[in-house]
Image (tube, rainbow, N blue to C red):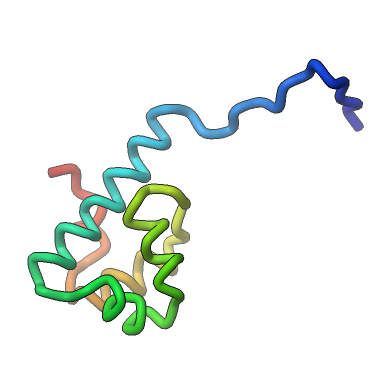
Length: 87
């Protein structure tokens, strides 16, 4: 067990490129959702999740699981690959 002192900092577990990747995924979900004319509330309902969770995913503020991405892709009528594409 590592003992922390007041001056020790917690290591940053998320690298900048990881954060950018999550933001890209969120942007793709949002773009596809808007292309299809689906509101964030409707997508949340289709995925059986809270709107606040969908908002965090679209903002890149959380790391969605593969199962969550599958659920979102299905609700949008696309393949997971389309969400992961960097356009």
